[in-house]
Image (cartoon, rainbow, N blue to C red; front, side):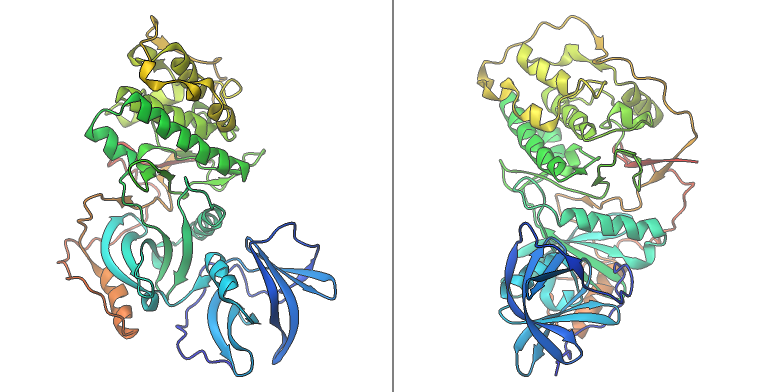
Length: 479
């Protein structure tokens, strides 16, 4: 009845459990991204007509005015064919599954964003390696059907050895799936093979803000245009209950010369009043809010502080907490003392910047408040030097003493691969493994193989402190 001959069998790394009950009683969904009438599997070989509504990763079913819901997040998605109903899709949950038949084209496209597929090398051709990190790499790829290019972030499953690694990856995917906003990186679909997880995102070719800052001085007009787009992106994230927690120039990329895209949700999490996050104190030294480094409860305003540092850097060319000494940089960031004398802007612009960088989060603007600041109604060309006589200013009240529990600095479990704008990385065993799978699937990869530059096996060690760059991501764990 079902033709699965082209399916690549693989264990589902992200599926939580082999669920015995798929549908639970529910109420009618408030809204949905796609809906329609389908033939839905009821039991083995038996199908019933039902109305389906997809809302995020929740699939709602209505039969005789009774509503049920199924969480289809990270289920195994396959395209199947029935000898009566024609083409359909199958959602696998270990030994259990749901089959859906009918006009599934629109539904299938939405399901791809929420589920896991297994035919990556059948669908995409690898063009070149554009980034690499501890747990995987980023490739530029081409969809074989429509010839469109994308970026795919890979994770080698054998390196995700801790339970928290799997949880962190699942959360990163869950959060990335939430966003449909022009200033947030667009996520498309996920694939899994026996060895790798492939996460497909939009391909950004406009470079990142770090490159632009290094290349030339950013005009005041462009700096405020960039920061407004960043704040709009943050306001949307925050409205969905998500904190980014790693705002920095490297994670601010461009779709084109003008359109900003905030990327990298590896440290993002849902806001919790109790502060019980998977990773509590995290971020990049030099861009963290002081309360985060001081081991205090924090909220969405930590992102606003980081955005303020980015604006400060665009206006002055300097990070206020920069130091070649890593520990000193962390200390300066923790203290939050800023030299305002080097900021050459008018009074309104300075007021705006200081409102973003207040050490006291109570006095700091929210992203929504910042967007509505009067500075964005001004003509940037008329900005003049403001009168700032003091050198070191501590904006906001002094924070209380930090928790003195011992802190341990370790690399982020899913620290994102760094993107190389020159796209000059070379291939190694990971690439060859993917290419071998491509050959098995009779896929053609049209690019010359580059010689392997190095063969370094990653060894995870909590006690090793990686300080190879000025922008390493930190996690602080209490004992």
